[in-house]
Image 1 (cartoon, rainbow, N blue to C red):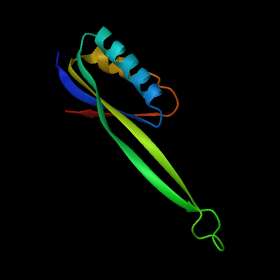
Image 2 (image 1 turned 90 degrees about the horizontal axis):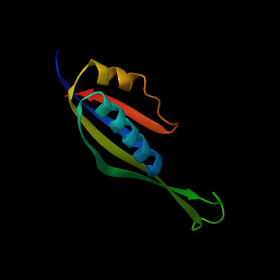
Image 3 (image 1 turned 90 degrees about the vertical axis):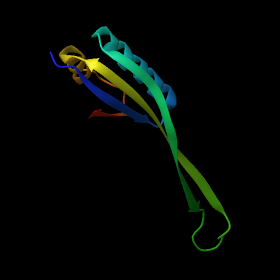
Image 4 (image 1 turned 180 degrees about the vertical axis):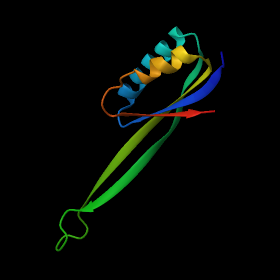
Length: 103
């Protein structure tokens, strides 16, 4: 049986939902017998937007908004077929993006 390693990247706007999802993924992978490292917090990406309140008269009146994208990385090593199949049938809450890359 071939042992494989891969990384799971999670991203979300809400860090609480992201941490809960990472915890559930780690529990599922550890049940299958693979070793897990993480979750490693990656830098939060902040997108800032400035919008004019009125396009014609009040040029100095502006609203500022920001969007924070939180990210986590989980590294799975010594995985087997059972751990990969448990991830493929795993359901995540809405708003959590997942990307799996093989090392």
